[in-house]
Every structure is written in structure tokens, then in C-alpha cells.
Length: 377
Image (cartoon, rainbow, N blue to C red):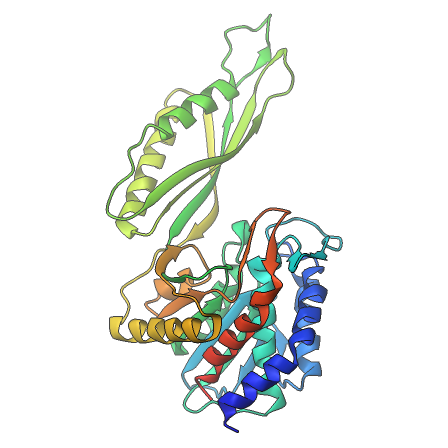
């Protein structure tokens, strides 16, 4: 029996273990910056499978280094442990009609399970990579205002040695090979406010914020790439009979083109400066900064894409297309490192409390993830 045939047989035999692991892990809360419980679970689980040298770094990344010396080239396989939900108590999970329902179950718990199961096979068989070191990483802080802290920390330490970066993320069928950069800001406006009757005519922070939002929404986005913007939340004021002294919003703009992103930032800053000339206080705080991609070796990048494409067709039976998104790949792509995001299963409802994954897609996804990792052994 070949190594390839053996790992397929073992994965089929471990189907119930994979489902049990998904259910266990899915219940563990893991809001961005607070993945401690999941990190510790993943570390202990890997060690129970015989993995050596597993550690949790300062960013709460769980790192299993395989065949890594002090200076050899590295390939990274990652899946993020955090979810968008703020829950600190056990997440509600149910199994029903061939599906597992749970907040965060597809984004990204399913993919962490696929990575862990691939790591189990490596550990149980004491496998050694052929020509590089391999880092198997359950990383933190991919979602929202996590601001890619986990992968930033990882690349700060290992980036000069990393020759490929693959993240398992996002149920579906497509390969993400382009980075969507973004800037996220909290904008606060403060005025004198006052009583709505006796101080009528004083400036209202809500009115100025509304006017600023209208100004931002008049912009025609640049067309070099795909560029978008959004006001996600607004708040402010005290009561119905109070002229608001304070109002604030969260605003973001995104693009898969660096020049477009810079143009959006110039327009944003000009709008803020205009409102400052009116004598109101405008405070701007950067909440998130995700870079676009930099030039990358096209031949090496295409080779990585082709390998993932072939594995997705073989093990998951899908026909992938290429796309762009904001993922953990933003950081290595911004460094010119061939990087892709690839999905390990099917589901729907990402970033909602009705999120689910199809149980039948779990084992094909584990086979796909394992095949990708096994390329180096």
C-alpha cells in the first residue's frame, strides 16, 4: 500500500473522530484576541496524537513545527481559531439533518479540524518533510478587528524563510489568490450640544456625522480593481431633548488594488479635514489595516494554485475558480510570498448564528487538506 493509499484509508476510518473533534471544538468560544481556550485545546489535542514541539506563541497561535531547523525554508499551513462572535460561554451547537449548526462552525472551525487531522497523520507516522520545514498553525485573530494579528506575528518571526503560505478557510469551492486590502476607522465628532429648546441652534454632532457620511457616500470609487466602502455602525446622542454633543461611526474601505486603496484614503482624509474647518472636533482612530498584495513570482504562485486546483478536484470533486478576498493571506502576499486561501468543505450562513456545515463535506475536506500537506513528505 502506498503512502497515498494509506492516508486515505486512515482518514475514512477516522471519520467519527473527525466529527467528534468538530463538535468539541465548535462549542469552545474564541472571539478575536481571546482564543485562549481553543488554543489550549488544540495544543493538548496535538500532543495527545504524538506531536512534538507544539507551542503557543504570544499572539495565541498554536504552532506545530515539523522538520524545521534554524534556517531552512518553510511552508506554512494555517487555519484560524477565532470566530466573529463575542460569546465567552459555550457556543450553541446542534446536529440536525446532516448538518452541524453553530456560530463559526464553517468559518473557521471546520478548517481547523481538517488541519488538525492532517497534523495527526504527520505526528503518528513521525513523517519528515523532503526539502523544507513545515509549520502547521492554528492561528489567532483573523476576523474583523483581530486585524490579522496572528499571521502578522508569525510572519514577523518566520517571514524571511517562508516560501509558500496556505490557509484553510471559508466553506465553498473557490481558491483565493488575490488580497483585498482594507482600512477601518472609528470617527468621532464632538460639538457643544445643549438643551434642544433653550440652546436651539447649537451644533449637533449627529447632524454633522450624518453630513460627513453623506459626503463619503458621494465618492465614485476608482476602477483599477474592485473597491468598496461602508459605514458599519453609528451611535451618539443622549436623549430626544438633547442636542447631541458626541456621535461616532465605524467606517471601512476595501480594494484589491493598492492605488485604489490609496485614493480612497486620500478622499477620506480630505473629507475629515473639511469638517474640521467648520470648527468641530473630529477624531479619527485607525482600527484595522490590511494590506493588498505585492508583486509575487508568478510561476511559483501559479504552481501552488495548480496544485490546490488538482487536489480540490480529486478529493472534493469541485471545479474551483479564482477570486479575491481579505484573509490571512494578505500578510504573506503583501511580502511577495506565493499564498492562497483554499476551502475544505461546504456550508452556509457564515458570520450569522444560523451558520452550518454539511457533514458529508467533512471527510473529503480532511482528505484535501491532508493531500496538500503530504505534498512535502
